[in-house]
Structure formats: structure tokens, C-alpha cells
Figure 1 (cartoon, rainbow, N blue to C red):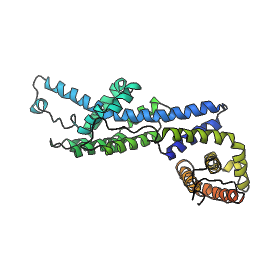
Figure 2 (figure 1 turned 180 degrees about the horizontal axis):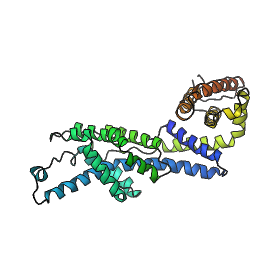
Figure 3 (figure 1 turned 90 degrees about the vertical axis):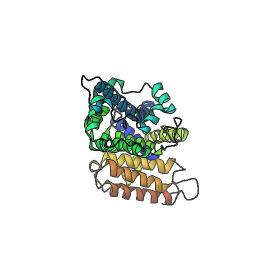
Figure 4 (figure 1 turned 180 degrees about the vertical axis):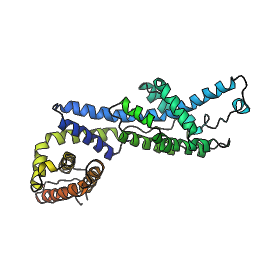
Length: 317
């Protein structure tokens, strides 16, 4: 589920807080970083439960409508297209999702007021009304609606987003956006032949290697901070230090950490990744600045023979 870029992002965020704090406990830094990653997966699993929560509430509404003193034909014979959505049914019965959410006690049961408001919002949305405009059913249409729910409807319901942010310090809008994209990716993997044993995306693509990458990036960035600071200072002598964004300095330190200590990561990959992060998290001019300083550092490190990459082609930039 989590790409190397996102692992870099979470490591960067954790280190930003670490260097700002007076508490310099490396073990705490590591544990909090991995906790933030675990919470990302919890949110992913929770989102996958939303479909069955909404269909359950709709089923209850239809049963109540039948109990009216003078029920209409629609009350007695409701359109069951949404409550029988094949994609949501597959997720509700998915063995892996059930086990993981049960093990972690994840559900929306404590958020019934929020779910009722969200259900009402969904029912009034034009995408839902278009979906329910016929009683014809197909897996393709059910799947499309499920994608639209997470891609278009949820991002428009600000109350849900704000409530999710309030639930955990690890769930900001960036994290929510990323998790929604992973939910959509998961839904798109399902087809008419899918079964309840379909695998749900794991937290890590390669748990052993990804955890090792994060641990080493954190520890080596901290342990080599003085050396990295000196290398950067030597290349920014013509800049006033207080004019250089702390974000830029930290991103360059992380890039240096990878360049010098991660022998299997190509130079070009490291440069591209941290230049991209500077565009995402720093000032508009940061991309050019970070790119320029890192280019100078790479040239110098190559000349000194300090760039030692393993594998053919890893040194080329």
C-alpha cells in the first residue's frame, strides 16, 4: 500500500518534529513513525467499511418506511439497487477485511450520528440520484458508483473529513487523500469473478525491506546530522541561513543520507524524490534551490569518491 515516496514523506514529517522538539529520543522517534504508518492502514480499513455501513442504514430506512400507516408503492417496493450493491457486498463479506477490522476493533458503530448525516448527504447527491434513476443492475455500474463515492462524494462532505481529522493526530488531509486513493485502487481491482477471499492491500509492499528502509533513514539522518549540516553549509555560504527554509534544509539532509548511506538506491531516484517533496512541502522557489545545491553536492561527492552505489547503473544521474 505504502510506496517508498510515502515512506519518505512520513519519515520527513517525523524528523521535522524531532528536530523541532527538545526530546531527542531516537527510539521514540522510530516508534511514533511506525505508529503513524499503522494508523494510515487503520484509516484505509475503516474506509472500506463505509459501504456496508451506508447500505445497512439504507436498509433500516426502507424497513421503517414499510411500517408507515399509509405506505406508498415506493415504500412497499423500494429500489434495492444501492443496498444490494455488488461491490459493497463483496467488501462486507471479504474474509481478510473482516479479520483485520475485527482484530483491530475498527467500525463506525460509535459514529452513528455522523453516519446518518453522511447517509443523508449521499442520498441527495446528484451522483447517487443518477445511479438510482433505474432499477437495472450490473457489477460495472455498482463498481463505478463505489469509485465515485470515494473519489467525488466523500471529498465534498467536509463534516466527515473534519471528524476524521479530529480522531487522530496522524490523519491530516494529505493522509486522507492518500488513503482515499488507495481505497479506489482496491475497488478497481475487483471484478465480477472476484470472491470474498480477495486480498486487501497490506500496509507495506515488502514489510521487511520497507521497515528497514524507514529505520535506517531515521537513524542515519539523526546520527549524521552534523556531517550533513556541514556539507550543506559549505554549499550555501552565499545564502543567509535564516532565509533558507528549514524544510529545504531537512529535505537536503535526507537526500544526503540516502546518497551516502543507501547503496542500492540510485542517485537519480534520490534526487528526483526529494526535489518532488520540496515542491509539495516548501516554497515555490524551493525546487530550483534544492535541485541546485544537491547537484553541487553530488558532483563533489563523486569527485571525492564518496558516492558508493552497488549495482550497475546506480551512479548515473
